[in-house]
Each structure stands twice: as C-alpha cells, then as structure tokens.
Image (cartoon, rainbow, N blue to C red; front, side, top):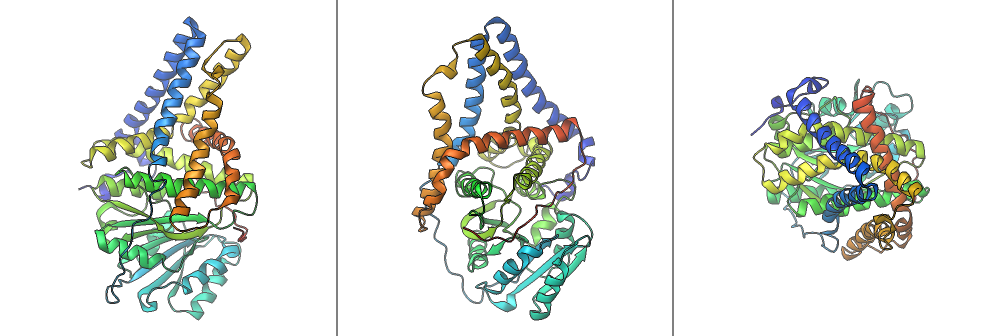
Length: 449
C-alpha cells in the first residue's frame, strides 16, 4: 500500500526523478514519431503522409473503443438500505463568487431524501470573494443549523482540505458550488458504497443550462458522452476510473491512507484518483447518482475552463505515469491508465500533421485522404458517441433528447478546437512554464435544459 507521503506536492514534483523520467519518456516517444515521419517524408512524401494519418487514426481509434462498450448497458439495480444504516454525511462545497447559483444549489440540499440529522453541509468560501457569496451562505446557515459557513484563504484544494479536517461525517461528499443534487443522489451513493465496500463512489455530472447557447449545448453533449460512456465504460471494463471534481463520495479513512487533495495541481481530482488506485483501492462509477452543473456559455469561459482541465491532466500524466505503471494494481488497469495519460499528448502529433497536409495538397499528392470513406469516417465516430449517449439514457428510462442530435454535426469541429486548447495547455506547462493558477469559471445562474 502507498500513502500520501509517497507523493510529491507543489513545485517539488518537478524536481523529482519521477517527473524528469516520465516527461523525458513522453517527449522522447513523440519526438521519435515526428523524426521518423520527417525522415520518411524526404524519401517518399506521400507514403510519409499516409503513415502519419494511419498512426494518428490508430491512436484515436484505440482511445475511442471504450466509449462504445456500455452504450446500451443499463444501470445496475441498487438495493434499498435499511433505516438504521444511514451514516453521517458531510457535503463540502468550495465557493468563490458564486452568488448567481447559490440560491438554486443550496435549496437543493434541503430537498435531499436522507435523514436530516445525518447531514452536514460545509460551505467553505474564500476570503477574496467580491460578491454576495458570504451573505447568502450565512443567511442559509441562520435558517438551517446543518449549514456550516467557513472562511479560508486559498484555492479550491486548500479550501477542501481545510473543511475535511473540520468535518464530522463518516462519508465526505465533494460538490462544486454550481451543482444541485437530485433527491436520491446521497442515498444511492451510500447504498453503493455499503454494498461493495468502495472507498470512493462517483456519480454523474450533468449540464443544467444546455439551452443557453450552442457552446453550452455542446458542453452538455460532451459531458454526457464522457460521463455516461467514457468514464462508466472504463469502469465496467476494469480500467482507470476517476473522480471528476464534483459529486464524489469518500470514506473518511481514505484521506489518511493516501493523503489529502494536492493544492498545487490544477486538477486535484485526477491526482487523488490516481493515488487512490495506485494504493490498491477502487473508485466506483454509478451514473444513476446525478447532480446538475452549469456549463460555460461563452467561448472565453469555455476556453479558460478547458485549458485548466487540459493542463491539469498533463501535470497528473507526468506525475503518475510511472507510479501507476509500477504499482501492484491489475495489469488491465495499468495498461488503461498508461493509455489515458499518453492520450493527453496526442494533440501534439495532430499539430505536426497540419503542415504535412498543406504540403501534400500543394504538391497534388494522392494520399489516404483521397479515400472516399475517410471523411465520412471522421464524422461517424463523434456521431456514434452522441447517439450512444442518447440511446444509453433512453434505455435507462429517460426521454430521448432529440434536441441534442444536433451535436452530430458540430461535435467533430468541437473536438478539433478542443485539441487546440490541449496543445496550448501543453505549451504553457512545458515551454512557457507559466504559473499554475486556478481560473474561476463565471456563472450566469441560468437553468435552460
């Protein structure tokens, strides 16, 4: 078993042997592929271009397979827990300038189907809040003693750690400030955790403002694909499942076993997920446990949020590539985790293919792109993902969301733009070496499904 003491925090990890070795291996592999392609290009440009497309297509195809495995798989049936087996739950919410969403999200706490005396809500807000976040939280606390306001200076991870150490719950639920529970979410999570002795159970985050604009619609569709197919499918296959920042339930003792949230990476959720599994514990994924979040409704907001996510993922990839590969977890999970970390750098290869494509076009070369089935195939994969998510929810008893079918046409362009964000994040982390700053996503408070 590994503990939190085995991991590097803050800038220390960049000085560690693990970081240096992992980053060297990753970029050596990418450089080798690029140099190989350049060498072949001077001998046979057309052949070089075809090989490039085949390599990239294979990587993307391999990474897409697991998204379709659970497409028609229904949710597992949960048993009802007995009335005398309700553990004390602490819901911890880190808040910074969240006045537009707090009325909705805090009101959802009052509707939870769980014994009231077994619930504790800790809202830890940052001292730097400049809106009405603090007054709103304190007003709710006056009406219901289960709400515990806490003020702390620091980022999200620091606030979470501060609250965890002062919580009373046997199970700790981490929730973002813009998330509102479905009534049975906590009961389902407790039931799942009790049945199979998991140390962590994660639910499904869903978008509540898809109807705002095209950006929020595509964010919601992307979220459905990732949560309902990707993460759940990976879990069903015994791969590397992870807690995604909100709607995660943890047994208190897990923080003593693997440490608290890392305060110096941009995706503290991915980091602790890796540490939990490297230590030999399982993260259960149950998409019948739902909460509703607000997606960005502006291109600027989307860019900043996704760039933070992408940069945090590459930070964790370098930190955990070797520790997870050398851990004693099942081979299937180690392979899946290695692929997960590696795929964060695939967009770098796509950037290299762009100038080759231009040259091939100028020279009038007949390449694999001339194949009449390639373009339809590039559209078909995202379309299958969109329909897979819609069908999965339909099979599970939800209505078929016909308004989301439009994602079939826009998702290929959305994914290309996402790749550009990923490359930008890699440049910031490894080339420009910019400070890791958590950029808050502005909320509108809109609810438009």
